[in-house]
Image (cartoon, rainbow, N blue to C red; front, top):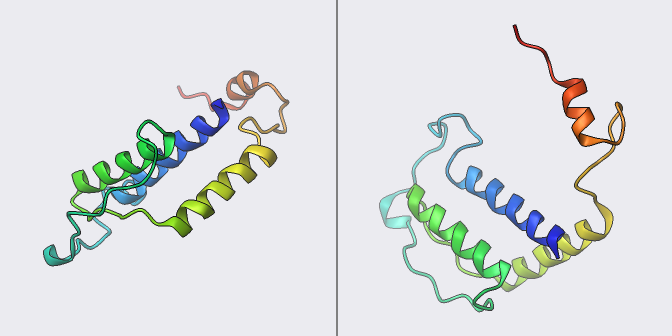
Length: 117
């Protein structure tokens, strides 16, 4: 299921930007949590060892740890909601949406690219 992996990769990249402050300039616009509030240990997740869910979860917590944030524990309700969202997106959303220029992404990119001198 290639679309599922692409959506998962996009999700991980987006979450990584958010948890590291990348969506807010230099990351200086956010307050650092108190040292005592940082969670450094969580129960083991129950995802299959080589699943895309396990990879996303491990990557998210590794990046949160690298950024100095606390770890997140697995949450069954959140897992259920994420799976439902992924299934809906896979059935109803395409990764290459048509644009006003046409339906060819390569032509669209070159046709709408601003020219810098």
